Amino acid sequence: MTQLRVRVPATSANLGPGFDTLGIALAYGDELTVRTIESGVRVSVTGIGEGEVPTDETNLVARSAAYVFEQLGRAMPGIEIETHNRIPHGRGMGSSGSAIVSGVMLAAGLLAADTDPIELSEDDLLRFATDLEGHPDNVAPALFGGLTIAWVNAEGTPRFKRLNVHRGVSPLVFVPNFTMSTEFARSLQPKQVPHEDAVFNVSRSALLVAALTQSPELLFEATEDRLHQNYRGEAMPATRDLISALREAGYAAVVSGAGPSVLVLAEDPGERIAAAELAAQVSADWSPLFLAVDIKGATVEVIPA
Image 1 (cartoon, rainbow, N blue to C red):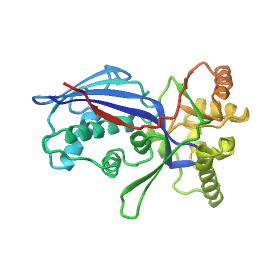
Image 2 (cartoon, rainbow, N blue to C red):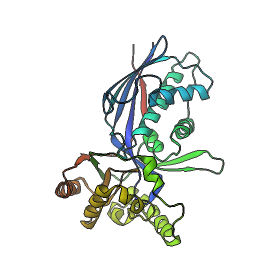
Image 3 (cartoon, rainbow, N blue to C red):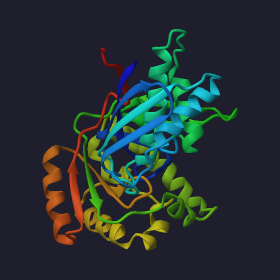
């Protein structure tokens, strides 16, 4: 019997102007314990999603692992998965991406421990995860940690560049008591945008990379966006109002992923206290998470028998 422990961080993608490109890993995630069994798939869930998500082979983690084995022409062994979930579902913190990465890492760990082992490269991991998620901006930071720039090359292959985040950057996530469908949020965006808006976002996304890695004092200007947040605002009025209040007070607040959570990229830890106090005055419907940037990304380790 092989036993594994898998840990995968939450993520926040888009980061204001970096639509479908930039993502950051957050030190707040899901943990799985995996055991091989004689046959079949059994899943138990504690924490977020308990009593709601499937506990058989249709579970997203299990389906993602099975996909990797299928693509490599290997038969997946029977597995028992115990998950402890902390990442909120449907809140813009990469819950589906983390589940997919959990399955990919689970498969990678089992394949590496096989009697005829297969070692998956970083490119393999990203490719499988992107196949399942549909785009790499969330799965890249979940896999590799830190700040990631993700794109798809001319051959259709997902690529990424990982960067270290400046130690002064302090994330704060406000999680609401309501959800938002990623598909619905994306449907609100127009297929074409004005030329000046496109140029605006190119400049701000470039600036945001510099702000996150070298110059946190530029975070407020660097998180300005004209590409997606305004279009989604009508569907998330509470999110729109909180971001507006925070930005009027000078905080670098953006929609986290597709929403409805709000991410504040503070210049230092102390700034987050004042931002949380302001948010509490706006509405009591938001729970603040004072987080750090996750620098490890997803990990898998063999548990000694």
